Length: 134
Image (cartoon, rainbow, N blue to C red; front, side):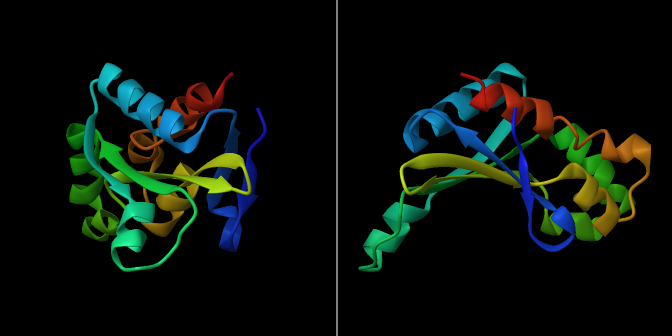
């Protein structure tokens, strides 16, 4: 499994998916449901761009989480609500589907979370590993 870290402080994780954007998003939302988490929104940014008369490569943002876990993080650090629920961006990069998200370590550092709260966010790593696994 290769993960590329980009951005300030290596805070963004990027993983390649062998599936199309639509198939990757479908699989992700199925996996979220199977784990008992909640999908809050699936935003088709390509469709929104088209409505504005603009072109955008296939780009979808999936917003999801576990309210019981996220609430504990926001109770400890209310400003964490800027980044919660968790978000996964699925987009087409010249024919290669990419899966991107802010790393749990970066979120923990940003909001000064201890290990007991950081673990509440860490499930995104194995979830996306399973998502992009062939």
